[in-house]
Amino acid sequence: MPRKIRVLIIDGELLSRRLVGRAVEGIALFELIGTAGLDAGTVEKVGRLQPELILLGIGAKAAAGFELLTELRTRSRDVPIVIINPHARKGTPLTVEALSLGASGYVAYEETAADDATIAQLGAKLASEARRLILHDSHAKPADDKATVVMNAHSPARSAPPAKSSTFSISAPIEIVVIGVSTGGPNALAAIMPKFDEDFPVPIVIVQHLPENFSQPLAARLNALSGLIVREAQAGAEARPGTAWIAPNGVHLEVKQDVKGVRLTFSDGPEENMCKPAADVLFRSAARVFGSRVLGVVLTGMGFDGVAGSRDIRAAGGTVIVQDIPTSVIKGGMPGNVAEAGLADKVLPITELGQEIVRIARLGRTSPPSSEQKG
Image (cartoon, rainbow, N blue to C red; front, side, top):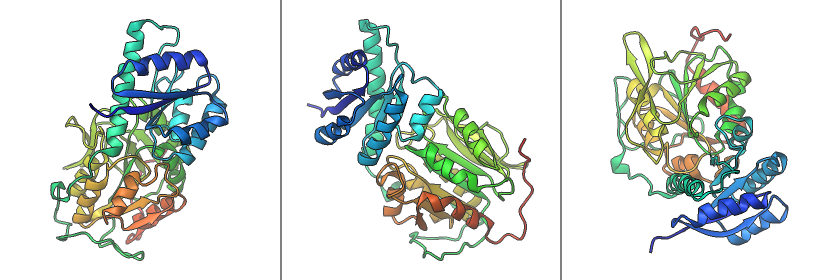
């Protein structure tokens, strides 16, 4: 008999807990192990029951819900937490804030519709989200022999990429920064983006695992924090200094070079690491185009996305730095797996990563290239 996923429902409204509970109990994948409200005893209950998936309803009690979410993320850093309530709509400030605080995803439903069809639809959504999150976090570690090694004229041959020392140097000025990030990413990006001004010498391209239609609100939020121009990625856009691009949900984002320069492209290949977009796809394309002139950055998130791509960057002679475990929302996860594979040139707290990216981007440059002016 297949193993069931242990689910705990947390919501301040009794009717909401009952409705969601009906949906969970109708799915063979789930085992409902309990429900709880938005109160002080809930954190202790989570520790006692050890759920594999938390469904958190915030609704009208947003302040209490955010406080509990923050506490849960501090104590249960590896458990997927899905926001689920009628207010969890695409791009709403409430849901963006929840994702920033470490929520793993969201599912919306109609609270006033409690018929069997609506309950079944909600259960199907929850099952789909659970498969994405649980499999994403626990699927097998990528094998070394499946990694794609990409080289170009800039790339010295490297058989096995050992970690560099803390005082490492680069062989040539970098030409692009690529970032992979997932759970807790909006806050991590908000911590580093203010370090970048309009004269930042290279383009930044970001894969942040987000639900559909959240990349544009996140880009707008980060644009207000940074001297860079931050936008949702558009196919055919030129990757220029002073700009940062965030991949939309549902397509892979890559960089390609043509006679007019380096441009962003979308591809519709299969998911990698249960993700689409995947950081590995972006990193692989950057290594192919720029070789040793790539800086890869892996921030907080669940799973192994970024491991194979970091291996490609290191094999091409590029540089990889990652966020440390203490400042990551997820303990270990994406940056921890990159470091464990011996692919991180540096491991730093989020408070130091932004400045380190700036330092590396300016190495070997006498003056910054021209960049777009922020309007």
